[in-house]
Length: 356
Image 1 (spheres, rainbow, N blue to C red):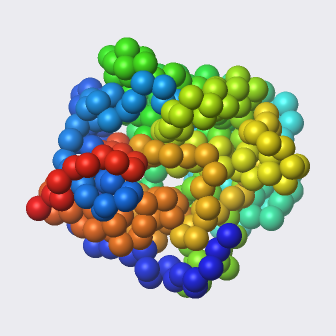
Image 2 (cartoon, rainbow, N blue to C red):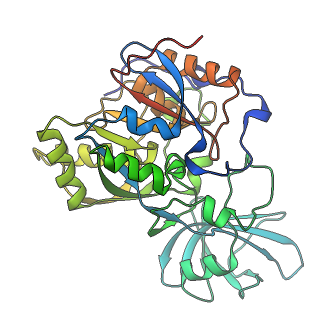
């Protein structure tokens, strides 16, 4: 699947801090969208609300219906020291695996006081801690926690983030970061896509806190990817098969959808299945240059951090030089980057003139 050696430094680019979006635009679909033709490398500057014009009747748009939990919780030790808890995932009705940040080491038996009651630190599990909560995990965090804005957003969460750092179709709680490409979809855009004759389907990939962890090895094939929970249901498998049968494209809204679909495709292939099968489990699939995509034909995605696994996935999809060239253009043209930023659309046959 993978061939040439690729290094971390191959995915670096210069990004002025003022290009990092700190807040969303007033309208979800008002952002800019840079298109990139996977065949020719040509690109064009457009708007997110132009997306229906780039889709074709018979295409299938696949979205991630994960729901972001208010996963960041603040507390104090008995000594008065401050503690920050970030939910990774529940592991029992009132128990969860979390990241804990404190000025001094945390030990089993510690009680962390929070506004919703005490958290008991139970045990270390690899790089996470198992804790016991006063109530059911998601209910507790949604009531007492904060929106887990990414570390590059240099402000405290606001009331509006509860709604804007969540997609319109979020329904399966479990993510601690938003599937950001889908933040661009509002009712008007979804309606225009449907009117175009494009079907929609859903997968669930619960984005974990590991999505923000940097790659710490220069040789990227030595990087260990974090695992995330995925469900690809029967209805989506049927929609993919029907789309393929009539010659339509599979359009992924975000890198999370790509990882979910391609992980399911690999598991179906391992089983010798002739088509995509329903699957639920964990994926640690690391998509990087050399990967052979089996399902995804087009990709809507935001701009990603330098040297990140998400940027590597996009480079695998459309070619490293073409993608990094598009990023340099985006920086020079004032695009807004990362979670609350602008978008890219990558597909074949866009026949756009090369942007200056």
